[in-house]
Length: 370
Ligand code: NAD
Ligand code: GLY
Image 1 (cartoon, rainbow, N blue to C red):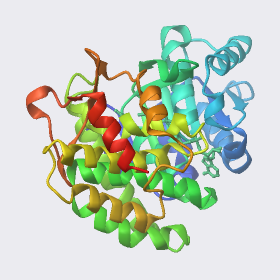
Image 2: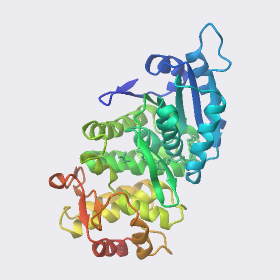
Image 3: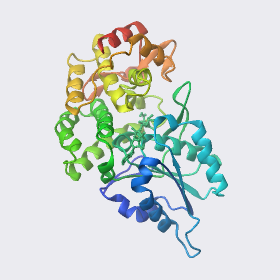
Image 4: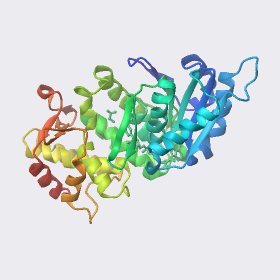
């Protein structure tokens, strides 16, 4: 087992950790009651096991029957809403869950963000244990305490910082994750490589085919996840509330979110981020911020993994730019970007890690991303 500390909570990376969940939760996040939030896909594979483990963790002489509640919601980003937040909250209230309840987010980033936001607000805040079951949630969404729901005004427009009490990463759960979702998770691993460790891009390129073929040794998968989480954890430990350095984690996301929305969410988050990273690196080269070749290096690994490197036909750059205008990083009428100096290092130390870019320059980069 690898424990990543430094954030005030433990992040455990361990193949078959779910088999030891009762012990792990009792040691790191003891509670009187547990409320599991998950989606229909994940419930099918893992809910019974997690319910049993939590019943054991909560057990005492008075019996366990009413100590574990589960709320299962439909799968998909379209359910990361205030309506589901209300439904989950109302279910917990109906069960009589009080401040002695710990919420357990079992699923991908949608569940992590939504259940995390329920935990942030329930009774003014109760603990949350994150059990990510997608690669993306393992290396990114479950770590760092950002929680949110989407609104018609945009993604993640209502939320809170609510760091978890514990993160349990069991790479064995990836066995049931569709290949397309696995690839999407690799996009965030590539992002962490661009931010802080150039060698990661080569490692991802060589491991990806094995990973997608479900032939990668668990030891390799564990260390891939662990290295990626360490990069994120180090950034978050320095700047949890995103006043500065944490902005680097948004690399690829400013354009990526616009592309994701313009695709009407037919592109997965990670797929849109892959396109966004290449476009933003190109933007950085155009502005003489990044070394020549930075975008090409990112494009090589994106293609090696089988992620899209360009915007799908039918999406206009103007539409992407329009959809980017609701970005939370908009300041003084210009969008602010996290841009690389080169693969492995980010620019912007002098400007709190955010670099304003005129829309006309963005538009040019978007035209070249077709
Ligand atoms: P997701 O949660 O929708 O999961 C993807 C799909 O995989 C879903 O259909 C889900 O039911 C299914 N699934 C999950 N685990 C499975 C498993 N082990 N086996 C079979 N099927 C499984 O999507 P995601 O990519 O995990 O997360 C995307 C979300 O994460 C977005 O809403 C994004 O905004 C958010 N996010 C948050 C942060 C953060 O810091 N809080 C960071 C990155 C992304
Ligand atoms: N995913 C960006 C962040 O956690 O800050």
